[in-house]
Image (cartoon, rainbow, N blue to C red):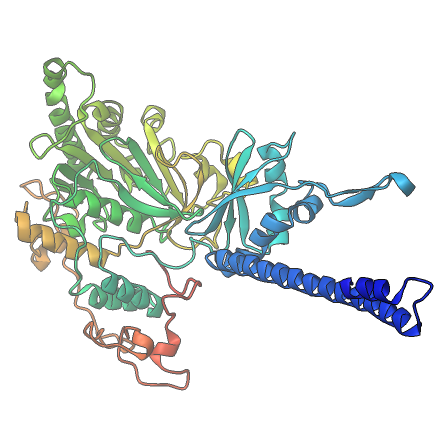
Length: 565
């Protein structure tokens, strides 16, 4: 440009400028224009490159952030974060973007949606914290649960809590009630062998044999006397994925109800296994069927497997008298409740299985009522169990003191009302124990530590594993009493009678014939199959495939076995 200016000045402007000068001037102006256009285009390309780079970085950050969450919930989380109005409006929880007005007054309304505040992983999926819109309440989200479940394409959505204008939702992608969860008292190798044994068994006899082999050599994850009554007992996993626990020291009485093979016995196994390992708990078991008491015969403080109600009453009366003897401590400690326990001042856990067997005995009912009403303050915990805990089995006064309630599968709605008076309301919400399709070990549960009534599944503690626990206890503490000796054949006719010493006689089992379908024993732990899967027994490859193909692996979400007895 300066060149054109000086050129024009020297050549004479404008009159004396010749054609050459005019051409130079036009060329300079045109060059300047072209240069400015090229510079602008270059700047635009650079801006586009920077924007694309920034978008790529932002996208990479989003992908990295989303990658930490389970795949099924990544899309709904992404839409919550970056397309909230479009996500929530169809569910009635937001406002869609749209044009409002017309003509020159038209304006774009970006819509309104919930603001995603936080995301955290849970055992069943993820939990999101959202900022609600003005006028919204938790009830709006409960009413929209089905819409959210379908829109997110996941198993379920649960309203967990709310505070102020924020709400917490659980996005469930897995069912915690499917599959077997072995008691945390057992080591992981044994737990895996138990799962595979339960999955492979096709008959109760086969299940017993395989579980016995699976539990052989099991290792306890806690030492004998390593637990206290102040420790939480892990009994179940709830439908929300969290653990259902009871604490004997700070807890209360409980009740367990369930039909035959509903999982009630396995539940009691876990409770008794934990309590037996505790250094400051005295376990008392009354079981006319002997199933619950058998593994703990050598270790429990008091046991009774007699069907004679007088024997059971005698045990209960002794416990009640020992509880009453502690009354003087109230004056010494200036309190109305014993809350500190030790080996010298232990907590008493009384478990009575099949308590309806003694329903007609007034003396037994009186002692049970006495224990239920008075023992809690003296350090006693009462857990009656049975197939039907009706008013004949438990008095109204006794039932009122049973705060922790576990109802496994039952035959009728009336049976369910024995533990849950609001059973019709629960059933209307889909919480029912009157369901033949309920997996064994699944129950309707409400406890002090888990006050929201929900479904839960008991952790798996087979009876065969209970014998491992009792063997470990005997090795450390010694026997409280030996196992009952087998009577002579002549005593079998009167096997259910009480002996002169007060101990119930034992029926000698008839010799067992070999089962032609019996499977070989489980191999040692070191026997592993493809991908490190422990092979539970040595079967040859058949037309259905190898045992490794037949058994569900640890990641199989489907329930492949009985799970519980």
